[in-house]
View 1 (tube, rainbow, N blue to C red):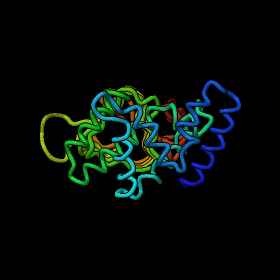
View 2 (view 1 turned 180 degrees about the vertical axis):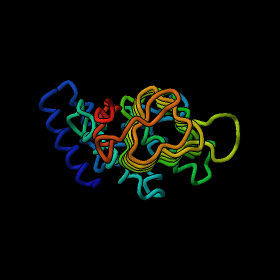
View 3 (view 1 turned 90 degrees about the vertical axis):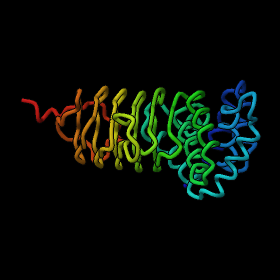
View 4 (view 1 turned 30 degrees about the horizontal axis):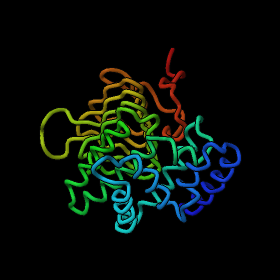
Length: 263
C-alpha cells in the first residue's frame, strides 16, 4: 500500500509543478526531493511542528526512528491518506492530503507521540502532544490507541482522552470530544469500534462503547453504550434507527434519521 501511495504522490506532484509553477519550489522540497513516503512526511510535518526551541531536523530524526521502532507506522500513514482521499468529496488527490490537510497531519503527529509513549519517553511524547494542539488544533493524549484508515475531517477542536481507543476505518468531524465524565483514574474514556462515524461537535463521554458501524449525530452527547450499526442523536443521545451503510465512516452520510422509521 505505502509504495503505491508514494508513487501516486510523485505523479501528482510532477503534474502540479507543470500546472502551477508558483508552487514548484514547495512541491519539490516537500515531495519530489525525497526518496520515500516516510522522508516526505517527516519533512512536511516537522517543518510545521518546529519552533524557536526544537528544530525541524530534530523532529525529522524522531520520525525516522519511529518508522523503525513502530513498524506499522508507515503503512498506517498510507492507509490514512487513502481514507481521506476516498471519503472527502472536496479532495481530489493524495497530494492535497499530504500537504494541506491538518486532520491527516495531526494523526501522524499523534502516531509519533504514541510511539514515544510506548518507549516510556513520556515527557517527550507529551511535549509533542502540546505542539500538535498548538499547531493543528487537535489534542490527543499520547497513550490513546488509534487504528488505521482514520479520517479527521476539518479536525479543529478534536479532543481525545488518555484511555480512548479508536479502531480501524473511523471518521471524526470537527470539535468531537472523546472524554471522561470527571477526575476519576483508570480506564475512563470511550472505545470507538470499526467503521464508526461521529458527527461535528459530538461529545462521547465515559468508559463506554460505540459499536461497530454505528453513527453519532452532530452535536449529540453520548453517555451510554451505542449498539453496533445504530444511529444515535440528541442530548442525551438516543437511538433513531440504523445507518444506511454498514460502514458510515466510509460513506460520510450526514442524514442521521432513518426516514423509513418515521411515520
